[in-house]
Length: 229
Image (tube, rainbow, N blue to C red; front, side):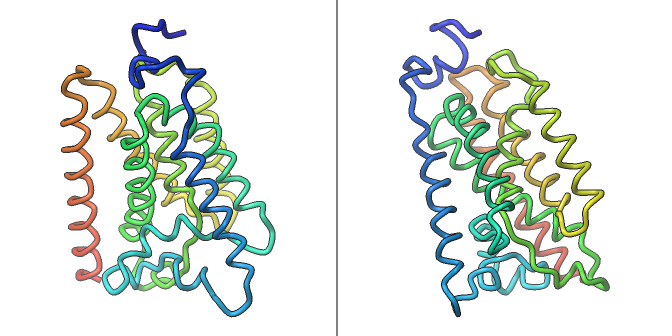
């Protein structure tokens, strides 16, 4: 358990019990609202906002908006991601702060889409398959929890078990994008290392450079992949 002078409580300048994960709640509320809007006939939000590798250059915003749409009408897909966001997100947001947590979530979604694109075969159905869901972003949050640091007062076993179960499920069940899980996980881990494995005074600039560099690398990789295809 962290003392009041170190760890996650120090990151926010207040006791953990007083911290409110406003970004986590906002993302959760927005995503649930989008699911309800999806049910309106004729809007076709899944097809407008989901990610398709073949459309990566033509409609690059889909790499992010993919995190806003989920399978319907059953809420199971949505609930699976939102439960992970609620429990893991609240903890990571407290450790990183509101702004850096939002960056992790956004880049995690983009990182998940990037991995889907990089590993998709242009000559297969994967190249034109519609990908939906916030799993890449949620796995980015879990990636932060895997950072080898004592600054996070967390149950590392729970995070590892979550990753193992989800990857196993993704390999065994058709229609689950383990590629998005992997991309999000790596993105979150790198950003988490940049934020938590350096001295506190340097963590802000280190995190910013990692985020900018990561986004640039993903963008370059996306362009080269599409052009080579």
